[in-house]
Image 1 (cartoon, helix red, strand yellow):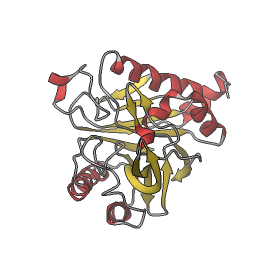
Image 2 (cartoon, one colour):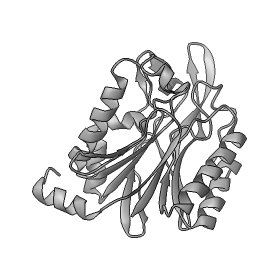
Image 3 (tube, helix red, strand yellow):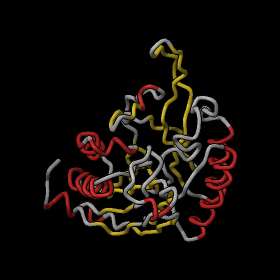
Length: 267
């Protein structure tokens, strides 16, 4: 199955981000991709203003625009967006929280996965503004079962193992990975480890690094480190982007999953 990983930088405006994503989708589909994976926060970048002001449900203009384009191109896509969730009180303030949702849309599907593990680490508290999800999500693309995880989820092995136990051969991971000391090392280690844990293909699409390679290694908010990747079920890194915007197109060999699970029956 041919997949595309879109590494891009999004900004504060969901309308502009949609237009940007539609252009990248057309480029990926033209190269023959059947599954196209965009980063977390495709609809609105983190640290670019309040998330609740542009949060939309799955019938809103952002998700609907991607659905129409995906159907027109005959592909399935996954892209990060934010949906209205609930209202909470934090330190005397009323906060309209959102779900951090991975939109899954295409010819035969239109649904979302809500990120289960919110990023409460490195002095950042995603749970203040984002309500955690509670359910695993899987879907099919041309007979291949695909699981979904988002960014910080990748630090939790059981989610990936559970997805594989439910039939996932490919797990897509939209991401907006925080840069900083040892963060790239951790990202590379974790993506390989989750492939080995689940004996599945890991297809991870990240936000490109704002400022590019010149800013690499500096501690910033969860706005991207680049290095989107495709990792095989034995942990080998088959493709990896750099810091800049890029599209990776790769043909997944699903027979490798069966071989890995026969030789490494860790599930």
